[in-house]
Amino acid sequence: MDRHKRKGAGALGRPQKNGNVSGAAARSAAARRRALAARRRRARALRRRRILALLIMGFCLILLAVGLFFGVRGILKIAGQEGEISKENALSSECEAYRPVVEKLADNYDMGEYVDLILAVMMQESSGKLVDVMQSSECKFNERYPREPNGITDTEYSLQCGIQELRDNLQQAGCSGPEDLERIKVALQAYNFGSGYLNYLSREGQTQWTEENAQAFAKYASKEKKRGEDDPYRENAGPWDYGDQYYPEHVLRYYQ
Image (cartoon, rainbow, N blue to C red; front, side, top):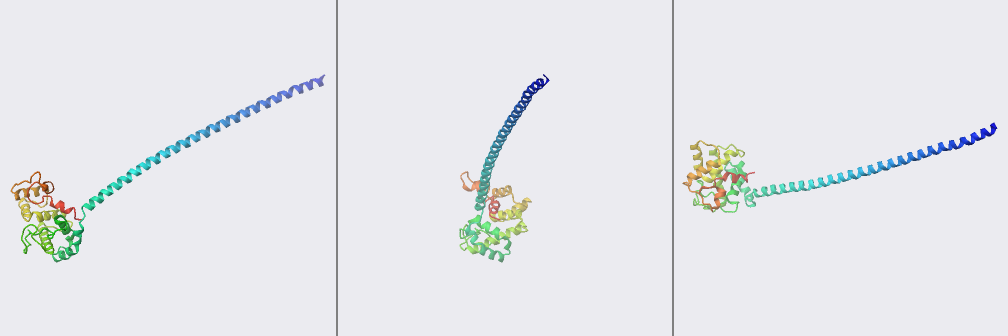
């Protein structure tokens, strides 16, 4: 009897043990499925982050490319404008061709350090294309030719007269050297107006060139005669019918 009970108990115990194993297996499988699902979610999230990072990087590269394009374009444009300005304000080849002669003559008149200024005056006066290259026919140093516009018919003599006239004006203006631009402006205006401008400044107690005193002298020298509205010199040379009231600024464009 007891033996049968033990067998029965043993028979009943085994199915209970198998049920525990099956439950554990099920839980393990569920855990694996959850882990797999979690890995898949992490993988999808990682892919999304990578795609987003690539999109952001691509967008940044596009912005960088656009910025570089317009930046380089702007730099080239500015460089081109500066090149045009530099070219516009450069001495003509005709003026440069006179440099050796100007250097020799300037040394003769103790003006060796003002060679560039002499060439700048030549550029403003004739661009080196006229016989009277310095337009010095009307100055006091011309003793050979008529003192009238383009009266000098000898280029080297034009240079001699012009250099002496400029030297005289620089000395009267009290110029200390080729970098003394304030005094150079006075001397240049006197080169254009004549020595009367220097006398006018002295009477007025002024020592520097200004657009106002240049126009005041031109008003006096022209006997208050204005240039007409259709006069091409009005805008570039000033309102009064006498000389170039902006002459120093015009010459100094070429003085480098």
